[in-house]
Length: 304
Image 1: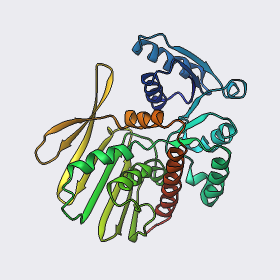
Image 2: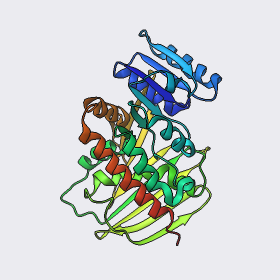
Image 3: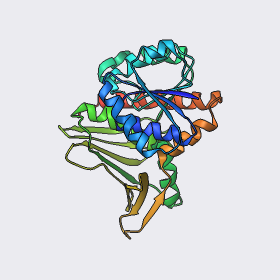
Image 4: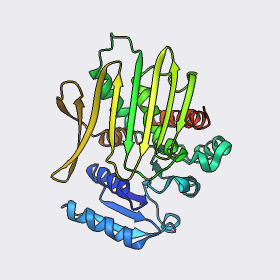
């Protein structure tokens, strides 16, 4: 299996490591910077002891060679350009969330996605929080009525103002899609209020008598953190690198008990490789993506 990864950032490295775990031994890194391509290959060669074939190139190679899987890990504001290029190919396309920038395409985003999905029906947008939410749901007493949920996600990113909503809201919406009722993404949100600051994007709304508060922040000086509170039950997610492996933990904020959990990104790739030829799998991801983009567009334009 031959794979290509568009981008040379940390997230590109994460995707490469997941592909390597699934037995892929031929990966080409594509980016504008040859220096960055060489650097990420050097890092992976040091971490991986098996015989792996790494290459580096530019976008032109996609017209010359066939790749079974193409991962798009480029900046969000050029996702649409890369999707136009790969949508005509017969490759499976894995793309980092969000699938496109709503600030760039604005109200044309739906027509754009309709066209892209018509050309390639095997596009998968990465939503690791779909898998993370299943873990958290098991911890919560489901017999207890949910009255209030806080989703507080702080990232060490560099986005500002509305860009924070574009970048991080898909995490929150995909989490609630599995944690709450299945029609969460299609339900009407009431009493919606929005607060936007340079490093914070905050939404509050009600759905089925549940008060939901989503707080998203990006600041290069801070480490990534997540805290979820359901009624008076709070957990936080912790991550650390152990012997070169990315480990995920959750901590009960009341008892301080820590529990290791499966890596949501690994779960995503396990799911993908089990469903490489499953049309329903791609259709399900497409429907979730369209719903997430619609709700994100709504919340992005709700200024109180």
